[in-house]
Length: 484
Image 1: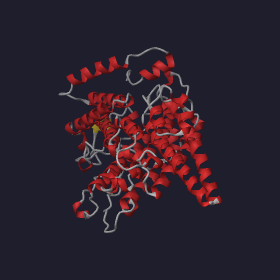
Image 2 (image 1 turned 30 degrees about the vertical axis):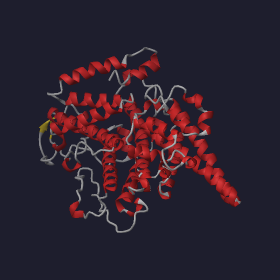
Image 3 (image 1 turned 90 degrees about the vertical axis):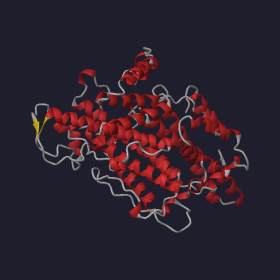
Image 4 (image 1 turned 120 degrees about the horizontal axis):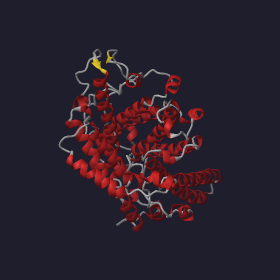
């Protein structure tokens, strides 16, 4: 925990904390305890894995996330509710131990879902073998005077109103929303895998459907078509997953609606009180809303011929750094530099999506609208400092920046074409879009600035410069100490 807070401590107090030394110490202790893991050990693996992600040590991040997934499977936590009944009687202490395992599992499963998407791999914990209920209720958790837990299910009340959630300040509701979203990410991973390896013709009887009864999600839809692939919207599951993510995002409690209970400067002595829980709850709902942005982008970045047509992926026209630089033969030098930077963090599937210009128009429009919606959301919550957010926030800003960079290039190309065609109305619309895209890009740059001291984003200047954006060159001083 000290290592995780090191950058914040340095920023706020000026005291230098040797992060590498602490990490080395923790790693040594983790190796000694690998053969006898317990709850604290698994949680330590999760924390140190997240820390590696913030330090841009992505191979270690992925490896430790896989280790955590393997540990919870080895300990049997993925089936702790397989034989449970809705009635029972256990001591509060026993229930607490069970609940710790349940909550730790869901954190591990959430990390694994993100890493599987970034690393282009299957999840460590198979959803076919997932039998873990949603975390238990805060009321049962908080009532330490309860000698025995006999009122079942002592679990989350999905029908609790927004007013009741804010009255109690129970953070569990943000955790439940995160768990539900993890199940959706798993479906995104599945459909992208199915697309890549060509499983569209399999019937429902041959496909595996995830066991999602505990989260009450619909089973996977069958992907069947005999038509030529021109867009992934031809497949019901693609459109269904998009719709479910949008619905999940829109059903969240709006963080801007919690400004009246916002007290950012709470003294440490008030840690855990209602005001502090509400403070943390607003931050969590803020982060949850941003979670949907990169996942939706990753989903729609794959809706391109260079992804679902093997032959198309060999053409440099689809993956060029800019429409003007597309040439036959080898990639341009700026393309190679960009890829070298990206490959340190992500795999080819995501990297290609971050650079591609052949995204189907319907998906591209959605990607652009998602960015504009994000900007409006950040403006509505401008009083929340981004250094309070988790490491998904830089990823959210990164995917949005790449969308705006490509949108600007598309607009420039459209302006040249419109001028040749002498279409006044069309030229006006494109210029308006170009102006909006440029303003949005600058806004995202400014929001990214504050993240440099807490998450290692120290190379984005090189990435943006090599993408040859004039606006980036003009604002290079904003990124003198930052990078991807």
